Every structure is written in structure tokens, then in C-alpha cells.
Image (cartoon, rainbow, N blue to C red; front, side, top):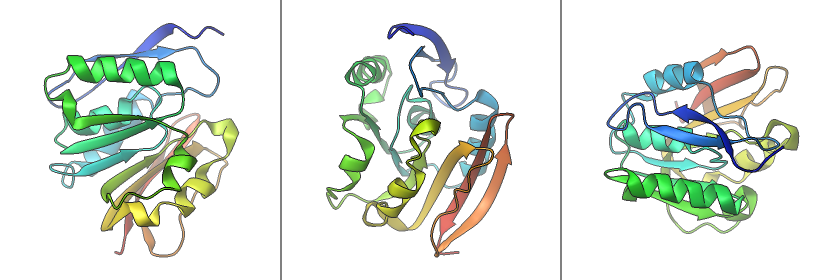
Length: 187
């Protein structure tokens, strides 16, 4: 298991379409598939322009950068691995408008424990599957999200990942390895 980029995913839509993002061979790093991202961003397209986005387990950056590519105003990408943060910063620096991405080197749960007053319209929760962080992350999200926020959750097929009361399932789907669901707060 190396720590160098061994593969890549691409941004599939918007102004940065076909931009390649490096993906290293590392435990737990499993970028959301092109198919799942295409479906997700089709669901999100009406709310995405001008949105403030939080990508808590950024990894390759595919979700947060795709959101920016498709019109989000800003995105905070939280990643605990220092090398991945450096790669994400390098990618953002080379993109026209990449300054809208703020890369934060932090553990996602630690980041959530220190609210800054910043509120997001959309949050992505797609942690490494073997760490079982969905419940802990979702439980700490409330002070970070706008009243009518959206929440995307990706988990193994057999994992129950429903958020607490007040969230309503908007859409869901699955691939061979993962279930993905989009929720909306309020109604």
C-alpha cells in the first residue's frame, strides 16, 4: 500500500469538467464513483448555485470540488491526512476560481467540535467505511448547517445511515458497494 497517487478520478461537470484529481492507494480512501456523483449532482443542481459546501471527509476532493465546479460559492474540504491536504491545495491552486476551496487539515470530528459560526447549505458525509463515523459526524452537524440545509451521506449497503428527526429523505440510490442518500432539513 503506497502513499503516492496511483490513480485518479475526474470532475464530471461544470467549469472544471474533466479535471483529473489524484487518488492514492491508501486504507479507507474510496472516492465516490462517477456514476454516483453524476446522480447526486443532478439531484443537487437546483440548489447548488451560490451554495456554501462542507466536505467533511474530503479524500480526493471529488465531492467538494465537483460542487464548486457546478456553481457552489465556496467549499470547505476537511481532510486529516497532511499529504492529501497538500495535493488538494495544489489542485485548487491550479484551477481558475480554485480559491473558493478552503482546504482544512483536521480530523473531521475535531473540526466539528469547534463551531465557528459559519453555516453551510450542503454537507457531504462520506467517511472511510471501516471507521464507522456517520453517527458521530451527523450528531455534531447542527451548528454548522443552515436551516434548510441538504445532507449527502454515503455508506456501505448494509449500514443504516438515517439522520435524526427533522431531516427528510429527498432521494437515494446504490451502487454495487455503497448506498447514497440525500436528505433535506425541514421539509
